[in-house]
Image 1 (tube, rainbow, N blue to C red):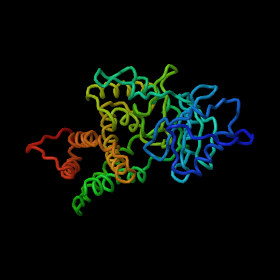
Image 2 (image 1 turned 60 degrees about the vertical axis):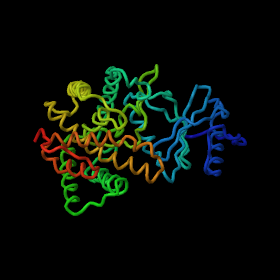
Image 3 (image 1 turned 90 degrees about the vertical axis):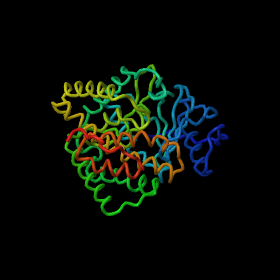
Image 4 (image 1 turned 120 degrees about the vertical axis):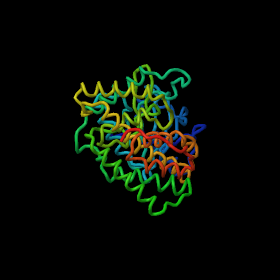
Length: 360
């Protein structure tokens, strides 16, 4: 997007609460900000930190003649903004409420975005009350709207190679680095066999556009309607993924009855809309469970990496939740029994003799 050609004024002093580790990047930022169109009425003295991302991105807020706006600060040597801009355009064309990219300095990784609000769906919930079915139905309506815009060859394929790289984060970061466990050849074969089976099962489902982190933490609530963030990693992959992400959240847990209710409602609406969810809900739900298993093996690795490599220990506080998801799914299927036993061994979980298994 072209910016104003006016000469930038001298950069103001940084606002309280906005720290810069790199003085050169701070200078580049203020030169860019000062060069944006005057008619936007950006009030530089209102600049403040909005949030930090799990990646190397961070977000600032600034007041303007159009109200509050958001700035993405994404160092280009660590973050590529092109996918964000591309997917934002795709979602806007599909009628979804996502941030509008008002300005983008690609060379330095600065974006000026419209503001979808300050509260996520997760922050808006009363976790002591009944789960908000209406909000989840709004979310699944938006998901179906997104999936209906799907076209092959537009987004990267969520293929076997990518799925394999993701599940490999579990042995690499969770097992070896976090748990300090060295797998022997037999244990590694158990893991490889399970990974092969999981990936094959997940790729048996038809492909649509996949957000990859479709959950209350990335759904924004406002009077203007529900909005969506953190979509830059979107791919073209199994239709089971995003509903698994929504209902098997890495940050909160609902009763199985509620998860089934929302998933059935989603499946019914998706089927009516012509999306490839199949004619048998039982088969679809099994697909969601197996995709959720893949996701939580990946999450275990990512959260360990965020702690050990990136110095963000708060993520591992949710370890019991996604290990529970992994064990719960594995316990339902005889084919996953060896993986269950290995996971329990790695985590030092003692299981009573006679532990029963469900489906084959």
